[in-house]
Image (cartoon, rainbow, N blue to C red; front, side, top):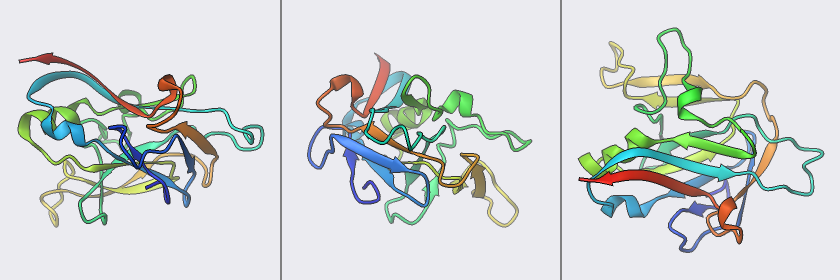
Length: 192
Protein backbone atom coordinates (compact mmCIF):
# COMPACT_ATOMS: atom_id res chain seq x y z
CA UNK A 1 0.00 0.00 0.00
CA UNK A 2 1.09 3.51 -0.73
CA UNK A 3 0.76 4.53 2.83
CA UNK A 4 -2.78 4.21 1.58
CA UNK A 5 -2.47 2.97 -2.03
CA UNK A 6 -0.65 0.14 -3.76
CA UNK A 7 1.23 -1.22 -6.74
CA UNK A 8 1.18 -4.76 -8.04
CA UNK A 9 3.49 -5.55 -10.93
CA UNK A 10 1.40 -8.31 -12.47
CA UNK A 11 -1.18 -5.85 -13.81
CA UNK A 12 -4.10 -7.18 -11.78
CA UNK A 13 -6.22 -5.19 -9.34
CA UNK A 14 -5.49 -3.34 -7.12
CA UNK A 15 -3.12 -1.53 -9.44
CA UNK A 16 -2.89 2.22 -9.43
CA UNK A 17 -2.21 4.29 -12.57
CA UNK A 18 -0.33 6.93 -10.52
CA UNK A 19 1.64 6.56 -7.27
CA UNK A 20 2.50 9.38 -4.85
CA UNK A 21 5.60 9.11 -2.68
CA UNK A 22 6.48 11.92 -0.33
CA UNK A 23 9.47 11.99 1.96
CA UNK A 24 9.13 10.37 5.35
CA UNK A 25 7.17 10.48 7.47
CA UNK A 26 5.12 10.24 4.33
CA UNK A 27 3.93 7.51 2.09
CA UNK A 28 5.32 4.35 0.61
CA UNK A 29 4.43 1.98 -2.20
CA UNK A 30 4.03 -1.75 -1.56
CA UNK A 31 5.04 -3.91 -4.51
CA UNK A 32 4.21 -7.58 -4.92
CA UNK A 33 5.57 -9.74 -7.73
CA UNK A 34 3.65 -13.04 -7.56
CA UNK A 35 4.91 -14.21 -10.97
CA UNK A 36 8.40 -14.78 -9.57
CA UNK A 37 7.25 -17.78 -7.52
CA UNK A 38 6.60 -19.79 -10.70
CA UNK A 39 9.18 -18.21 -12.99
CA UNK A 40 11.27 -21.37 -13.29
CA UNK A 41 14.98 -21.86 -12.83
CA UNK A 42 16.87 -19.42 -15.09
CA UNK A 43 20.18 -17.60 -15.06
CA UNK A 44 19.28 -14.03 -14.13
CA UNK A 45 21.69 -11.60 -15.80
CA UNK A 46 19.87 -8.47 -14.67
CA UNK A 47 16.68 -7.80 -12.72
CA UNK A 48 15.64 -4.26 -11.93
CA UNK A 49 12.65 -2.38 -10.63
CA UNK A 50 12.04 0.69 -12.79
CA UNK A 51 9.95 3.58 -11.44
CA UNK A 52 9.33 6.50 -13.81
CA UNK A 53 8.64 10.04 -12.59
CA UNK A 54 5.52 11.58 -14.10
CA UNK A 55 5.14 15.37 -14.40
CA UNK A 56 2.49 16.81 -12.09
CA UNK A 57 0.84 20.17 -11.43
CA UNK A 58 2.94 21.01 -8.35
CA UNK A 59 6.39 20.17 -9.73
CA UNK A 60 7.36 23.85 -9.53
CA UNK A 61 6.75 23.73 -5.74
CA UNK A 62 7.76 20.17 -4.80
CA UNK A 63 10.96 18.70 -6.16
CA UNK A 64 11.42 14.94 -6.25
CA UNK A 65 13.58 13.29 -3.58
CA UNK A 66 17.07 12.66 -4.94
CA UNK A 67 16.92 9.02 -3.81
CA UNK A 68 14.24 6.45 -3.06
CA UNK A 69 14.83 3.33 -0.99
CA UNK A 70 13.62 -0.12 -1.97
CA UNK A 71 13.54 -2.66 0.82
CA UNK A 72 11.71 -5.87 1.73
CA UNK A 73 8.98 -6.32 4.34
CA UNK A 74 8.47 -9.65 6.11
CA UNK A 75 5.17 -11.54 6.13
CA UNK A 76 4.19 -10.03 9.51
CA UNK A 77 4.78 -6.52 8.11
CA UNK A 78 6.89 -5.68 11.18
CA UNK A 79 10.49 -5.84 9.92
CA UNK A 80 12.31 -4.27 7.00
CA UNK A 81 15.19 -6.08 5.34
CA UNK A 82 17.96 -4.89 3.08
CA UNK A 83 18.57 -6.52 -0.25
CA UNK A 84 21.66 -7.93 1.44
CA UNK A 85 23.11 -9.45 -1.74
CA UNK A 86 22.37 -6.43 -3.95
CA UNK A 87 22.93 -3.40 -1.67
CA UNK A 88 26.53 -3.67 -0.52
CA UNK A 89 27.59 -1.94 2.68
CA UNK A 90 31.29 -1.13 3.08
CA UNK A 91 33.20 -1.74 6.31
CA UNK A 92 33.78 2.03 6.41
CA UNK A 93 30.01 2.69 6.55
CA UNK A 94 29.68 3.49 2.85
CA UNK A 95 26.59 2.39 0.94
CA UNK A 96 26.81 0.96 -2.59
CA UNK A 97 24.09 3.18 -4.10
CA UNK A 98 25.89 3.26 -7.48
CA UNK A 99 25.38 -0.48 -8.02
CA UNK A 100 22.02 -0.88 -6.25
CA UNK A 101 20.45 2.28 -7.62
CA UNK A 102 17.63 4.40 -6.27
CA UNK A 103 19.05 7.75 -7.37
CA UNK A 104 16.87 9.81 -9.73
CA UNK A 105 18.45 9.96 -13.18
CA UNK A 106 16.61 11.28 -16.25
CA UNK A 107 13.23 10.99 -14.47
CA UNK A 108 13.80 7.30 -13.63
CA UNK A 109 14.62 5.49 -10.39
CA UNK A 110 16.21 2.05 -11.05
CA UNK A 111 16.95 -0.64 -8.48
CA UNK A 112 19.23 -3.60 -9.20
CA UNK A 113 17.71 -6.67 -7.49
CA UNK A 114 19.41 -9.31 -9.64
CA UNK A 115 20.71 -11.49 -6.81
CA UNK A 116 17.41 -11.27 -4.94
CA UNK A 117 15.48 -12.50 -8.01
CA UNK A 118 18.07 -15.23 -8.65
CA UNK A 119 17.57 -16.46 -5.08
CA UNK A 120 13.81 -16.71 -5.60
CA UNK A 121 13.93 -18.58 -8.92
CA UNK A 122 16.89 -20.88 -8.09
CA UNK A 123 16.86 -21.45 -4.33
CA UNK A 124 13.12 -20.78 -3.77
CA UNK A 125 13.90 -18.03 -1.26
CA UNK A 126 11.06 -15.87 0.10
CA UNK A 127 9.35 -13.55 -2.35
CA UNK A 128 8.75 -10.66 0.04
CA UNK A 129 6.57 -7.61 -0.40
CA UNK A 130 8.81 -4.76 -1.54
CA UNK A 131 8.50 -1.23 -0.17
CA UNK A 132 9.45 1.90 -2.14
CA UNK A 133 9.81 5.07 -0.07
CA UNK A 134 11.87 8.23 0.54
CA UNK A 135 13.16 8.33 4.14
CA UNK A 136 15.86 10.53 5.63
CA UNK A 137 17.31 7.34 7.08
CA UNK A 138 16.05 3.82 7.60
CA UNK A 139 16.69 1.14 10.21
CA UNK A 140 17.00 -2.06 8.26
CA UNK A 141 17.82 -5.63 9.23
CA UNK A 142 21.00 -6.82 7.54
CA UNK A 143 21.50 -10.58 7.70
CA UNK A 144 25.11 -10.12 6.51
CA UNK A 145 26.05 -8.00 9.56
CA UNK A 146 26.38 -10.59 12.36
CA UNK A 147 27.22 -9.36 15.85
CA UNK A 148 28.11 -11.22 19.03
CA UNK A 149 24.58 -10.64 20.38
CA UNK A 150 22.88 -11.52 17.08
CA UNK A 151 24.93 -14.04 15.06
CA UNK A 152 22.34 -14.03 12.25
CA UNK A 153 22.46 -10.29 11.63
CA UNK A 154 21.55 -6.95 13.12
CA UNK A 155 19.71 -3.70 12.52
CA UNK A 156 21.71 -0.94 10.90
CA UNK A 157 21.00 2.72 10.27
CA UNK A 158 21.06 3.43 6.55
CA UNK A 159 21.36 7.08 5.41
CA UNK A 160 19.15 7.67 2.35
CA UNK A 161 18.43 11.39 1.81
CA UNK A 162 20.28 14.41 3.16
CA UNK A 163 17.29 16.37 4.52
CA UNK A 164 14.11 15.34 6.28
CA UNK A 165 10.90 15.71 4.23
CA UNK A 166 12.92 16.32 1.07
CA UNK A 167 10.37 16.47 -1.71
CA UNK A 168 7.70 14.29 -3.20
CA UNK A 169 7.40 12.46 -6.48
CA UNK A 170 4.59 11.16 -8.65
CA UNK A 171 5.41 7.81 -10.27
CA UNK A 172 3.69 5.80 -12.94
CA UNK A 173 1.84 2.87 -11.39
CA UNK A 174 1.51 -0.64 -12.78
CA UNK A 175 -1.70 0.36 -14.57
CA UNK A 176 -0.52 3.67 -16.05
CA UNK A 177 -1.96 4.32 -19.55
CA UNK A 178 1.56 5.02 -20.84
CA UNK A 179 3.35 1.63 -20.98
CA UNK A 180 6.75 3.38 -20.85
CA UNK A 181 5.86 5.05 -17.54
CA UNK A 182 4.56 1.96 -15.73
CA UNK A 183 6.19 0.68 -12.56
CA UNK A 184 7.78 -2.55 -13.73
CA UNK A 185 10.25 -5.33 -13.15
CA UNK A 186 12.66 -5.86 -16.04
CA UNK A 187 14.45 -9.23 -16.17
CA UNK A 188 17.20 -10.27 -18.57
CA UNK A 189 17.74 -14.04 -18.30
CA UNK A 190 18.91 -17.21 -20.02
CA UNK A 191 17.22 -20.58 -19.94
CA UNK A 192 19.09 -23.42 -18.30
